[in-house]
Image (cartoon, rainbow, N blue to C red; front, side):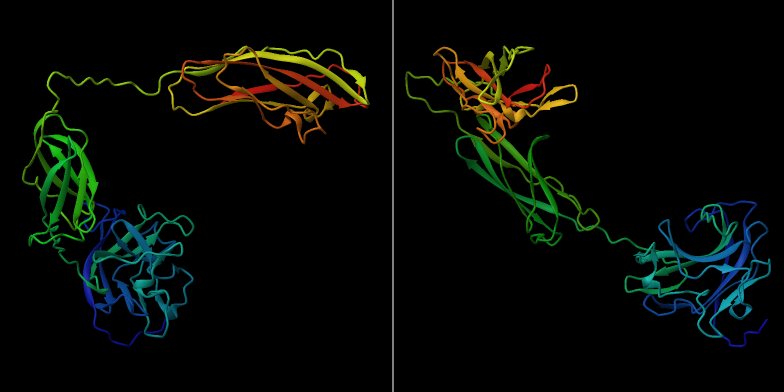
Length: 441
């Protein structure tokens, strides 16, 4: 093996090789193997082309964990590979692998060495997706793997070195105590007035700790009367506006509270001061009274009945080169007891092909001629549909049997139709059946 003669300042940190809990603190265990991790340089920037110049551990991988070696950085439970895998067949010019039980050392002393690190720290990725470190503490882990094909970062053993990185990308050996920046304190200034006869128009201004309008504060403002939430409104440029629903006659003490959607940057506010809105009683003329009534919405039904289970067109007769037959649909009764102003309705029909075993008559050769039954009807009859070729597709295309809307005092429509079949004269003999489907919308 070639000797490394280049001298580089290094910091040695006693670490522990443990079963893989992904945090800095490792629980005490008889399986922990002490080791000294040494790296150079001691500090750098995440954008440096070579993250590390050398990595060494003063002991080798334990028995049972000598298949391959890998180096990771681990932060917040996420492991990112930073170097090529080290195998027992590694050229000794690159260094020692630790996979034979002897101490491990990989260095760039003899030129480019991707087994030390293979990218800038800023360029690390998982499955091709960049996953850079965030400001805070992280670990450098030198892993000893039990299998070259089945890596388990939880059970495979590793040596750990505590490190940290700043928001500017400056990293160093050793962890930092991160002092969290407290969220910006907020308050709410509330104004309000009676709007209309019995509603309140409210404006809430979110203020920061200097009592300036917090134009960047995200979230909503909650408007309350006592503990009852009247409603919420989004904050835009530090201001939220809200108009209440109808308030009862009398005095209403209303407050507001800012609810942050970024509690790391902006804290929820306490309740604002009280704004009082007074709803006056309804003024009525002497000797008169106000009568009100609530009519529920969504009442009534729309339905139809009377569709036969089977309609026979009898035996077709060859007339004018066509097999013609007819029959009667209905009468069908459409009942509409919904409220005035409800949507209009349409009863449509569509037919399938006629079949007799493997023989087929195209459904387009069936048509109809709708007609109302009686005179007291809310709806109207649909247009006649001629069998093809008198129409493009006959009843094979959905066609209206009847249409209508809610009519005051008239709740039903009775309609029927003459069904007409005009099949080609070369149609094979047989008993043919088709399905006619009516849909009320």
